[in-house]
Length: 429
Image (cartoon, rainbow, N blue to C red; front, side):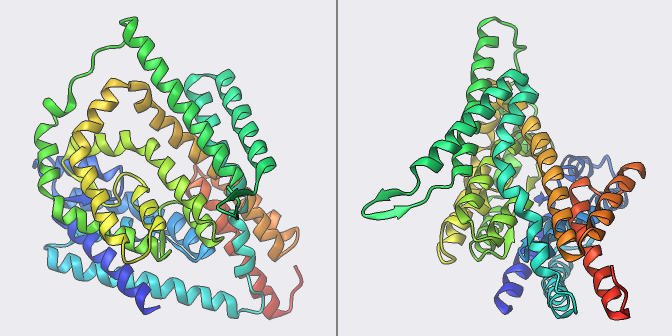
């Protein structure tokens, strides 16, 4: 517990300092606005209000429920909070102190809630672990859905069939004998990898055809024109960003934090290979977003380009993780202009980022709703289905006050609390 408090406290402290110094923030929506603030076109009071409005709901309705269900802290819970703390603080010393206190408080608070849930008459923690089960199966459909969005349903169906064949083939040949040892390769992981190769191939092919047909509008060289100064500004902050990368990878190597609901689900189930694969693959979806917002504002992402720093941490032990993470973040900082050039050369790959994020959101919405209903029903048969389904529909009618993918986990937690209340007062569900 003490190790967790120290590591999470350090991550929170440094992230708050970076936000206070206008070096890095986590929220993709806040990053472009930071450019408005640093250029003097926005007041600090306005920036504080916007950052709080953007982050608070996601912390309460998204980060905390997933962290409770998996018992691995979803990084949104930490870094969205430190964005607000750093931006609101008058100087870096206060930002660091408040950031550290926030991280330690989150660690103690979540641990206390888990212990409380376990001590209740109806132990709901075992049931809450079921929330992520549908994610494990459905995440390999992601590339096919992204292909369908970008290149049409026929190519999407082709990619789905290709992924299915890869999955079935891997099931058939598992386990593989390597050096006299039996090795089981994840069929879902192979299906995901094959689908992503198809998506990238379609993107490169389409970009090349457009270029040859002269239908592609020539893009400005981002690194040589408007964004040159911001790219230099990001590179000047190499050392503080490298420290952040080191801390992120350290926390990931200890399995204390995860970068997405998919990551934390696999970590909670001990499926490290799958967590590594999904973390690396998510990078493709977020490179265009992070690079563009970074070059527009001169402010980088405190978690790096999506989750690959987490994947580096999952790959190595805690001793090597800080060095690998620092190297990874340094590669991002120095490679930003080359990434921009690559995205200009293959605009369809840049467009794929939007489609990957859309597909990921939709898959998570469905998978987590199903998982939440399964968990709630396991806690309180039939009553659980009733509550989660009702909350989901009411949330839509109310204008989606809660992020859709958080309704399932929140509903399951609510059912668990109600089940214990009814158990204590002697009512049957």
